[in-house]
Length: 86
Picture (spheres, helix red, strand yellow):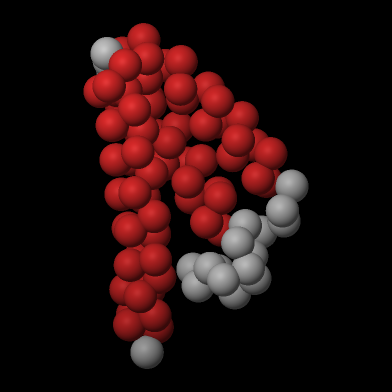
């Protein structure tokens, strides 16, 4: 259950970070930059949770894996969304 919570926190943080970027393509306008503060708070919360759930090396690997996975999936969702609109 802790791994699922950790995954959701990391995916939410990465999504908010991506959506606050001016180069994002998912929304017509990027969200306000003040959301990035919440992103960093979520990342800081995720680090001790990951260290509690996994060993040190596995926690680092899991955090990096989830961030990379989210940064790959979110832009692909924007491509799928565009195809549905056309």
